[in-house]
Amino acid sequence: MGRTIERTKDSADKLIDGARDVVLDIADRAERSVETTADSAAASVTEHAHDAGDYVRDNAKTASRGAHRRVADAAGAATRTVTRAQKEFSRAATATTDHVVDRPLTSMILAGVSGFLLGMLVCWRRE
Image 1 (cartoon, rainbow, N blue to C red):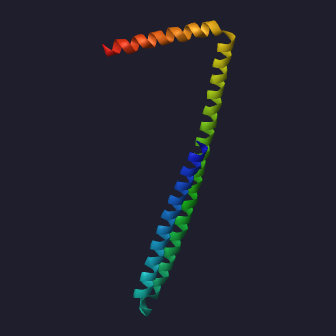
Image 2: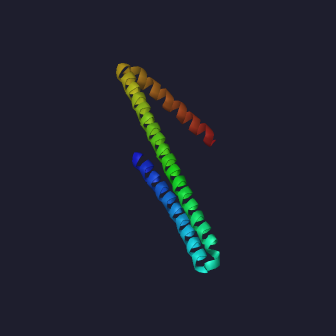
Image 3: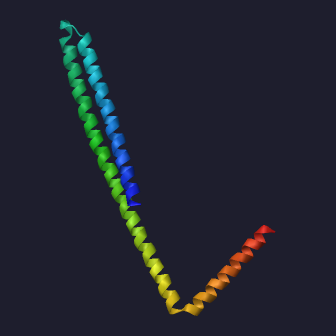
């Protein structure tokens, strides 16, 4: 289960990185496009394009870091939940085993009665 969480986290990280790369690529293309079409009279437009590209890059990196942090937090929470569930299951299994060892006859009678009632329920539903 822990490996599944780690693979899911890695997939989310890759997706976030891919989205960031796409945004950065678009910003670079837009910047180059403005640079190639701008003439000497449009120097201020080019400067604004550089500023806009820097702004987009900075925000994309900030968003990426935040998303990575949230994915890591979610993976940690999932791992803690799985660990807690495994401990609870182990505790319940140990308690059941102890009960059966301490009271074998009672456990056999209870299992027999439960099986009989379950069989009756299944047969009754078929009719």
